[in-house]
Amino acid sequence: MGIIAGVATLMATAPLVAIYDGLAWLLPCAVAIAAVVVTAIAARRLRAPVWAQVLAMLGALTLILTWFFRSGDEIFGILPGRATVEHFGALLAQLPTDVREHTTPVPAIDSLMLVTVAGIGLVAVLVDVFAAATRRPALAGLPLLAVYSVPVAVSFDSVPMVLFAIGAAGYLWLLGADNVDRVRRFGRRFSGDGRDVDPWEPSPLAGAGRRLAVIGVLVAVAIPLAFPGGMSSGIADRFGPGLGPGGTGEGGGVGRVNLFAELYGQLNLDETVDLVQVTTDDPNPFYLRLATADQITDTGFEPSAPSGRALAQHLPAEPDPAPHAGVTYHEHQAEVEITADFHMQMAPTYAQLVDMDGLSDEWRYDPSQQIVYSTRHGARGQDYRLTYQRAEYDPDALRQAERLPAVHDIQADFTQVPELPEVRELLDDMIDDSAAPYDQVLAILEFFSRQNGFRYDLETGPETDAPAIADFLENRVGFCVQYATAMAWLVRSIDIPARVAFGFTRGTGAGDTRVLTNRNLHAWTEVYFDGFGWVPFDPTPSGPVVGSTSPQWAPNPDAPSDPDTADPGDGPTGDNPDDPGFD
Image (tube, rainbow, N blue to C red; front, top):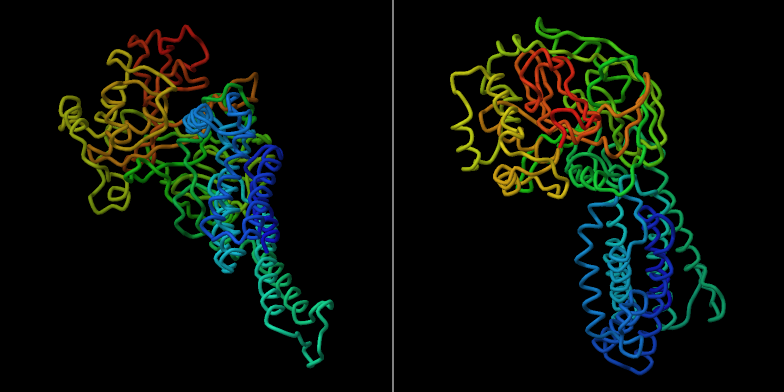
């Protein structure tokens, strides 16, 4: 039973393939499991009590961790000492930084490997205690399932069902072996027709049970795969990460991804990675969007669960809302190619989609968030074409927009925000209560200028909760996440709907083709005006952001005020160090 418990634990580690780049994690995990198993068997041979078995297994695991993650100053070269503890502490202290700076699949970094091997080793201890020491093998399913939950929670691609089946097979083997062993201890075995079965013969009943268990696993895996469209809100979707906090909607719920942390980690990578190539006939495209964060919780801004139908069923025939006198729509086509290094289940698109071709019906469109997403597949390697209408807003027309009535759904849902004294004090000095909503939003946009002490810096972290917003408004140092969320927070605080959008800036390239890298990932603010819909504003300084743009209705606060020296339709691109907004 101890050996089978160890093998079942090793089989349960199969889903780690989804989060690691390569198999460098496998050998240390296998050695840790083997050390736990051998130590447990030896302790039971010596008739040690359960608590002594646990201590022996933990001691063996500690020796294995010391061997694989040596500091170089161990006692006799193998026994852990003070230097070992300090080395482990340094690796754990480095862990949060490594988590932020890397996205799945991750390399075999020492800090991540230490946590992985230690975690798998502890699972092996628990499984052995439940299955062999206390003979409660059913309880061993809990730590085995915990192993599977980790890649499900952190991977940006769906964890293949076959990996779950491998772990499930190990667990069923454990249960079956325990029951066979109990029958053998009980007495003589019989076949289904009453024939006596010799001890050396395989049990017909046990064989039937094994066949039924295999069939059950195959059916459990096959049914969700056989109905990709009809089970979109089922367990298969929960195993794949997505945009929101796990809620359900029309088209199914999806898992949770911290988009702020993902953006922060990608921007902090040491290397530049090509993620998207877009070819468009639009000479002045805006940003390519991925998702929105429109809910504020105790942890800050979070995406809500997207809700949509298959692309072919749900794309609007015309812009939403209907064309307004102050909005000019320019229809364009674009082709988007996603590289193998893009690890999300959102397909980058432009706003105001009219048509889209090249993605299967498993991809869905959420018209309220204006995003294309999947509950099942990642976007890597996808190639698709889209028709969209880029909107240009007349500032004078926006100035005529009135506040939404309090009973309007958007007004109720997108103005909720915790009260912060720091925010209220700033707004009292900044906002003219008699001004039009658009002018109030412009006043907030202009606040995020170098003249007011704001500075771009990627070292501030991705947090967006109330303390982080208050800290940013005081220290005035941050990157696009802080700028976009702080502006949305301030706009909501004056009772105007706002949210945060994620995506790519315009990128760089020659002609109609632009290459978008991890350096182009960006966040900006969107404000809702009655009759106009969601209007984008980018408060982040344009200089440090490659491919940024400042349209005429949302001018760059650091741009020259002389209209003869500033382009009212475009603004600085962030590509030129001589741009007035460059830091």
